[in-house]
Length: 256
Image (tube, rainbow, N blue to C red):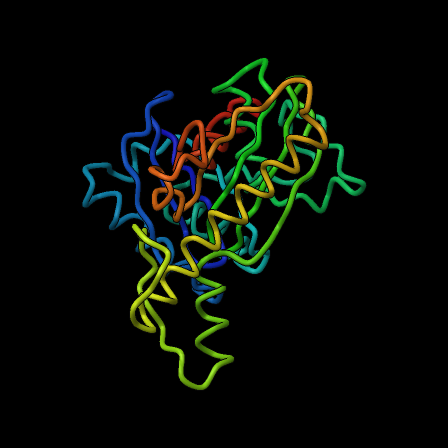
């Protein structure tokens, strides 16, 4: 079995693959100062509670947008699983042609998204929208060229900014809304967050399509922790919440 860990700014999203089948998923809050022992005990415990013993883990793959977390996580894998993890970073085989001016700037999570997307939809142009702490859009050609994309504040960051920088606006639950017109402060905030992201996503996918995919429209894939909120909004052709984990599993195979 393969343990894949996607370390984000807000959560660690983990999964266990048996071959190509994702058998177990779990999440925990990211703690950048967590020790290797804290992480090791958590991982062993959450796997055991889901029917997987740590001795069944044959390999571990990690992608992280939090550099400070890598040291503890690497030591955790060595001490508690007897495995030196594969870390998706510069120099790893990805099967992609990175067209960023500086390829080292591309986040590992966006690379993992692109790897999985090109595997799921070979021979198609793609736009991947990842709705996490930040919301990102990545354009990938049918020739597996990672062209670039867009990065902006995600739903939770937007909510936290409103709460912290205004005197009277409260923190609200981020939910899917049925109508735009809010009849309370809470509803108005929830509507602004939800429909604001929809409007932004539609405009960005339209512009990216016009700029680079005008002759061959792309498949638009939604992923990330908040992507499920928009499943009924016609934003995406497909929603794959675990795209990063699937990309990590594929990247591990390429680099073994």
